[in-house]
Image 1 (cartoon, one colour):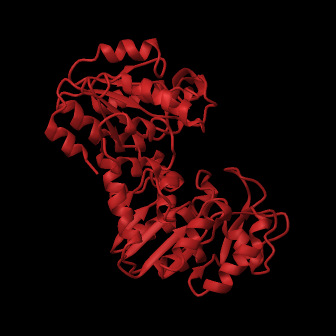
Image 2 (image 1 turned 90 degrees about the horizontal axis):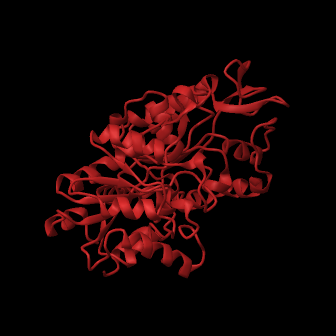
Amino acid sequence: MRTLDDLLKVGVAGRRVLVRSDLNVPLGSGQHGAAVVADDGRIRASLPVLEKLLDHGARVIVTAHLGRPQGAPDPEFSLSPVADRLAQLLGRPVEFALDTVGESARLLADGLGDGQLLLLENVRFNAGETSKDDAERLEFARALAELTGGEDGGGAFVEDAFGAVHRKHASVYDVATLLPHYCGDLVRDELAVLGRLTGDPARPYVVVLGGSKVSDKLAVIESLLPKVDTLLVGGGMCFTFLAAQGHGVGDSLLERDQIDTCRRLLEESGDKIVLPVDVVVADDIADDAASEIVAADAIPGGGKGLDIGPASVAAFAAALDGAQTVFWNGPMGVFEVAPFAAGTKGVAEAVAATPGLSVVGGGDSAAAVRALHLDENAFGHISTGGGASLEYLEGKDLPGVTVLDEAN
């Protein structure tokens, strides 16, 4: 597939380049209740491609989504706060369209000068973005492509939103069928790193999975188990595995319909799967909640397991010691609440300390690294795409990547 460097060699000065970026960041409340970016990790990851294009004189039009609005404008999901933060990080002005392909977008796109950037409003405010109807999706993609002047007008498309490439959406897939298209550096680097996990990884190869539900990770567990040396399971999903072993889990998160599946996985690959030996339980998820550490097979009735305990952290760290390849996806507990953050922090530190390639699989794991003030540079790679990373490791085709291989 053609890369950003290929586009730059052709030349971008004076041309409008549509860039699909991943700016799907969490928002919080700032001064006077105004929405502000709470975690700018994905914005910062998008900067290198944008800066290269701007420095080469491109007229850059950025499209991105935020959250899951229902195909219509919703102030709660506006990209306006993202535009403000993007301008701060770029150190240059960012024009912001009040719509996706309407009058505001067209006027601002037509008015762009060399080395200037326009961010369109949340692309999911248009129902065509996520439509299951190919014709409706393509119609919206054509409107996006027209903002660049189209292929005849020198327009080009750069896919740099790895966190969205597993979606067959208009701004991810269809627009690439209409314009000369190129793979952005972020997507290129993500694919290169994940390829090392699926090819012939250096061993020992250890995977750490957390998060809420076994059902969300079942496909990747099935795919990875034959390839890994050790699979460490924490987070809310561990309680379904513990229940499959016959242990009571109190009021902890439990997927009863997955117990038989977990039991089968333990029977088939129990020598590889490592579960917590102790957990932190409490009656409530709160900073002032009274909590205690109990053995994983002695969770009291009514108690909620909200983090793995210190003995489990030590056991997981021992399993990670000396690992040459590590993939971590999903927190070990409710890390956003102080009494239940130690497990995630301890395991993250153990992942960072491994001598080989350590990959943090995006989403909540990447957010935890930043929220717990860990050194991002201590990890080999922090992915920007949780769902996309998992689907890649499952062996699924990623529409936003597949289309980049097609001629245009």
